[in-house]
Amino acid sequence: MAGDLPQLSFVIPCHNEEANLRPLVSAIREAIEPLKLSYEIVITDDRSTDDSWTALKELASSDSRVRALRFARNCGQSAALWAGMKAAGGRYIVTLDADMQNDPRDVPKFLEALKGYDCVCGSRVAARSRGDSFIRIVSSRIANWVRNKVSGETISDAGCCYRAFKRECIDNLKFFKGMHRFLPTLIKIEGFTVAEIPVRHNPRVSGQTHYGVWNRLFASFYDLLAVRWMKRRMFRYDIAERLNWR
Image 1: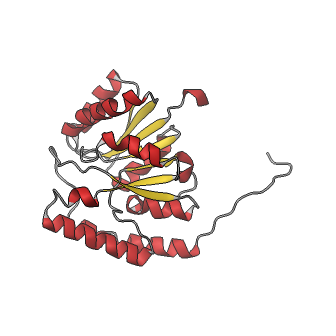
Image 2: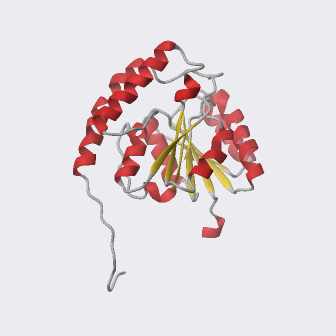
C-alpha cells in the first residue's frame, strides 16, 4: 500500500470559494505535472453556503486525485486544515488557501528548501508591499510583530498558510482552534526545523476575504498566550530502545 501513496498532498481549507476551486485545481495540475511527481488534492469544505460542494463533487468525479471532505457544520479554518492534514497520505504536505492568492508555481521552491529543513513557510511580505492596501499591510505587520514578541519567534508572515512540510511534522501535533496561525511554532516545539522563503501573492479575483483588521490584531491573542504557555511547559522525548514491545 505504501507504494500507492502520493509523494505530495495539497491540503486546502475551503469556505465559499465556488468560483476559485476549478481554476485552483487547474493551476496545481499545470504546476506539478511537469515535475513528474505523484500528488493528491485534499479539500475540506467548511460547510460553505455557496455551491462549493457542487464544484468539488464535479472535480472529484473527473479526477480521482481530488479528494473532498465536507463538514456537518461550520468549524473554522483551523479545523478544516487539520481534517485535511489528517486525511492526507503524501510524503510531503503542502497547505494553501483556496482563494487563488497562493501561487502553485512556487511549489518547486518549497521542495528545494525541504532538502535542508523539515518545514518551509511562505512569506508574502515583499509581494504584499507591492499590491495590498496600506491598512492590510500595517495590520499584518503589527499582528506579526505582536505574535513574535509574545511567542519569541522570528516568523515574518505567520498569517501565510502557504507551507510545505514532511508529514512526520504533524504526527504528534496538538490541535486547537486558531492553530493554523501558529503551525511553524508548534512544529518547532516538536523538534523540527523551520525556514521561510518569499512567495508570490496574487490579487483575489473571486469571493470575499474572511479576514480583516480585527482578525489580524485581536482575535488570535488568547491563542497566542496558549502557544506561549505550550512553549514553556510542553516536553518531548525520544525512545532509544524497546524490549518485549508489541
